[in-house]
Image (spheres, rainbow, N blue to C red):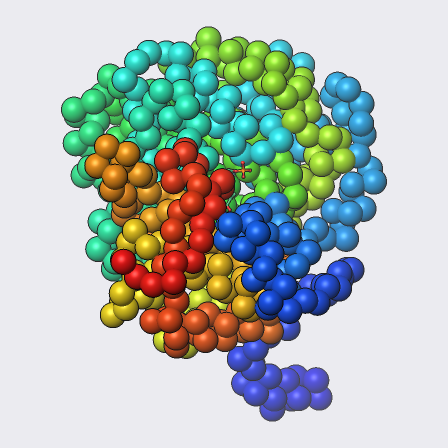
Amino acid sequence: MINKLISVFSGSNKVSISPRPYINHSVEFKKSNTPEERMKTLEKVGLNVFFFPSEMITGCDFLSDSGTTTMTNEQWAALHLGDEAYGSNRGYFRLREQILKTFGNDFFNPPEKGKPNAFLFHQGRACENALFSIIGQMGTNLIIPSNGHFDTTQANIEANHITPINLFSLEFKNGDEKFRFKGNMDILALKKLIKEKYNSIPILYLTITNNTGGGQPVSLANIREVSEIAHHAKIPLFFDACRFAENAWFIRKYEKGYSQKSIRAIVLEMFSYIDGFTISFKKDGLVNMGGGLFIKNTGLFTKKYPHLIDAIMNFQIRTEGHPSYGGLSGRDIMTLTVGLKTVMTDEYLNYRINQVITFGEEMKNAGLPVQMPIGGHAVYLNVNKFYAGTKMRGEDFGGISLTALLLGLYGHRACELGYFAFGKYNPNTRKEIHPEVNFVRFAVPRLRYERQDLSAAIVAVKALHDKRDKIPPVKVVYGRDLPLRHFKARFQFLPKFH
Ligand code: F0G
């Protein structure tokens, strides 16, 4: 009887919308306010959405997917089991077991061995600061190439007098809409660079997924090839591994030969090709705070620069804490241990990435210029295409106007990651130097919003797009020439175009 019923209804029980794989554990009601109140507040903070009080956001907060995760009930329970001892707390040993399971056996030496190679920090940029401060002391005129450095990575490299270089893939630069691994590194450009500047490259970096390059994944073929080239040239390879699980999901979905593999097996293969990684656990650690720097004990970095590992440990102890807790409280470590397990499950990852993809596809179907294909953690809107046919020019920073109006008028907070965030002002020529990308990013926090929330955001962006010729340019009234200027600058709407 049961089998008969299943066969009678099979097919019709496959509906296009599936339920979420979780239920709400607790919710927070938002405060209501009006567009006038939001616009006034926005004016007060110089149209810089970073300074807008989050309590006034009535729609979705897409500013970042970082540290904005809703924790599971298991994580909240684990938090209570946190052990706040000053050295070697309970969570440290549990985290070690989980790191070995997730990333492989070579990234966390047993503490009794006395050779720490796993360094906990309070967030990703603190790891970057440690690594590049130490590498920066190795010499002058150093360069660190990547498939796409994130802004804080770039800033930490530059702060240590090293030059960051981005080797975006050709498919990314050409705007190829079909290619599934646009986050890849440009192999030809890498070979050329190594040939010319071999002695100046202390390490190579691959960011998975490539956040600056539109949240696009990197294929295992590309990871393998970069690793072979790097190791042939005796250059250690590092991951910026913030979204490692999302990257693995794309490999399983789209790379030949991986459809039957588990996420765990794919992650282990990815990490088998590298010599170390930095990670912000605020993304695929599914926690609100945390980061780590891990060096492979059998890797090239350890062999080539054995003295640097001790220097990293000294740096960590001086700036964060003992290697057995780093920059984290015992309870943070416990929640991270659970988060790393959850992030690898199929039910979590399938839901997570399909939610982002559906959001992007619906935005595209609404006629909005979405960067295709859609990446793992965010939907990127192409600002130049958004304003095509209007008077908006690059130096008018239309991405800033768009994010300001979206927040002020409709209550959704997105983030300009384009000509303002990544561009530079040249005071000599009084001209802007535009970067290759001009996006507004809608980063989707993990386990936080429902489809209705995301649909409301699309309707709002569409309303702005319909009247895009009425969106004013902005003038930068403060911070145009500062480093990391998008975090600090202030703007004003201009009444008309130049
Ligand atoms: N690397 C990548 C690829 C990132 O996306 C981030 C943060 C970091 C490093 C730095 O980590 O924030 O823990 O210090 N990205 C966030 C974002 C802020 O919104 O994309 P952190």
